[in-house]
Image (tube, rainbow, N blue to C red; front, side, top):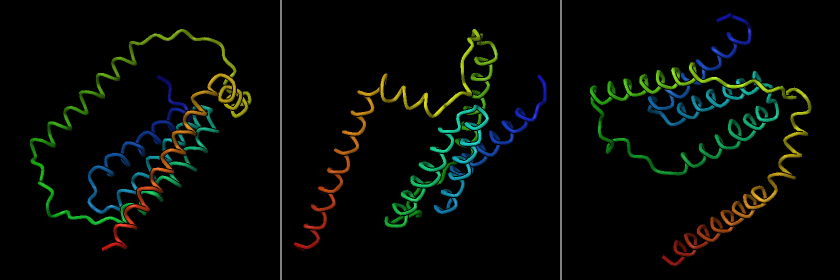
Length: 172
């Protein structure tokens, strides 16, 4: 194993992503959890940059780190939270979960280490965005359009649900 700059950058970004995920699960204040989530999303975007997927990295930052996190903050701030009713988890349960995560990580490491992939020459660094656009609008046009119809149906459904709740509140 050689220690190159790319390897060290990957290890640093992976460490930030893992720490952000662990903090997300263990913090108690919701705003702190969202900040940990932002660190995780930005670190994953950095890993995408290392993989020469700049378009995916920019979408990761714009969509997840920006829009999804803001939507989560609004949703969290507009809902009522009772932390007193949550049961406390014991030390044995935390230890078993930790051992399960470590065991899973070890199994994944062994599986990846022994996995032989045949190297095929590809054009990774040439016009990534154009290649994604061509594939999206030629090979995957049906799933793309079905996704847009699904999102439209979700938008209409949320508007109908919001109107029904407002109408019920006005009736009372």
